[in-house]
Image (cartoon, rainbow, N blue to C red; front, side, top):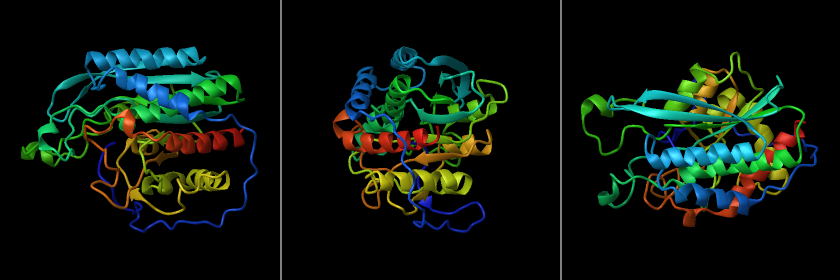
Length: 325
């Protein structure tokens, strides 16, 4: 995940108010999200090792993701580009875009980042601060949810188009251990792949009705409060998803309350691409980080993923998607 959580505040400086007075929503038939399938994908991604942008492990996992989406009937477009790291180094990057019903103009967008943070700079042991993160939750979990969704949509087709975008180079923001003043004040070093895509969409004049970003959607103890940027740009989508989750039995994972305001991949999707996009991201009220105890540590491993959390996220989003058909 990108930057730290701040107090909830909209661009106009006024705090959004959580609402619960939404009528009961009619529930459409939708596939059953299989958490074990998503969990298997997390393990398979992590088996390559940390997927740090530009490494051989990164290339190998990218090929795996492409092949899996193709296996589920998606058309895949790859964006390859060189982007500049916080210290000026050029890094080879790769956004992966998988599309269902690519010929349809009516589309919905799902996205996640697939790279690993190069440094476990939030680990409680300073000796690990230069060690790459395995990124089971902060990376692999979002991709795994999208892969499982693609598998299920292939079995129960939709009439409109769906795009799954795996953004690269999200997690290369200035490390906490960096002390050089020329870097420490930089705030545009996160989310490089999504900014590139928003400025250079994979198809000319690309548009989608709405988007959903998955970021760290499998960690134990996760609860997903309503994120501030999401509420500012796409509050209708936020309200629909959170109230659907409550209605189908996952309200404990999606409390009707405000979380933080996050610099994440959805910011570029909203502000540059002009697509209303929400962020499903955990908000921990206690602990070493608002993003959870494994955030940017060497403990971000498959053992710390909870299939029940994956299930709550995947089933709730599928329900919203199939309610749209």
